[in-house]
Image 1: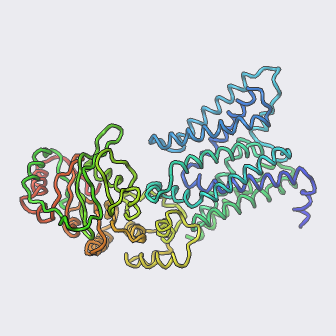
Image 2: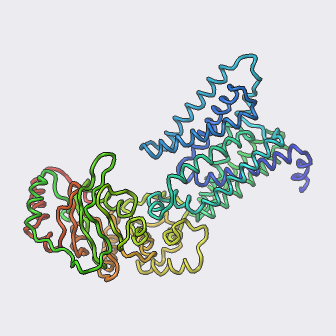
Image 3: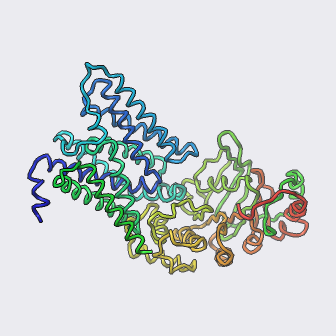
Length: 276
Length: 279
């Protein structure tokens, strides 16, 4: 039985994949608690597609897929802040604001990729869309770990004030919480985490890492701190089990991890129903 | 509807202003210490003047009902008192300090509870959040005991560990009242606290507000459209209309037969417009 879990880890690429999966799932789950609670579940999806636009911009400017990350990060963060600005200054709902920016960025990405000539570097669009956690290089793993650690530390540092701001912005503002700054910070941080996560799990699947563990935890947690801890547990457990399962089933890793997360959600839903 | 203190649509503001000036309006004793001093305050938002040259003050322990029709500038004025909006002219002092320094002496019970009903939180978390000025990851035994005591005073001790999502309108208001009271404020602002509460809950909240009204220490501003609530609680009434102070006096001066509101009610009987019971 132990071999079932340890045998795949005999390979270096599986070790890197596990470390990257744990880092991405942990940080996405913790941020996801606030994103879901703020009613912005669609944000992860929107920013992932905005990231596609950023990567395409980088490729158009001559960067490699790996280096295009450094253009995608500020591009996606700017899109996130734009979504925040529209949310604060208009009566539009989060999904509408996200939808507009998502469409713009994705369309821009497709347009920029189509403008590339036959002499430009070949790009595997499928790897951008669906990710390649098993192909994570030591360099990418370092970036993932640094960004995940920085994002986790920042989130822990602002947890109490951010939680109050998400609960009721007006009451938090009266208590001196800088609500607008925290909201923009959450959006920008989510953008950075999404871009880095896209390198491992792809544009299409990354939002599931943000939404599913947080949504499952919300069904089970009685307090926000409890829900955060549960989201962290579900996210990392799903990533580990999903990765090992994908090895034995010879199935795509990202998709298997998300299916395990979905199974956790189904169990959380069942427990929630039984409690009522 | 009959308890509504809205002046009717169709009654000319000038007529009410004339009626208001003819009323006797007794101000608080100037020798008393001021918990809140609103001094010639004007507030302009995006070029539109919402509050114009409003002055009144509240001594320690006085229960004031802030009344006026929708759009009178009540909520805008409250936001300025709580430091959420800047004043364009005049000044607001809380306990002798400016809003930035003094707003922690104010407890606030909002009208619309903006929180997501599915937010995973218990009553004790919300109350302790007001104490800490940030959301608690873990409540200490001392904080819990303090929250329990203040919630017990509001008649809601049993609600301490209940999820906010499962509370009724009246129970939610008790928790928000406890939240506002836990910091031992010198001024509490109650913005339409009976809105969205059933009849039984309203009666219980009214008793709680009467208790606050009897306090010699705690001053209060109650925003309400409900004449019955005003009659039961007000020690003084401040009436705003179109951003201006229309009258500021004792309840019997403003709520009597020949008063401003009586004139307004008579006129309303002839007005075709329908006015909602709560804002």
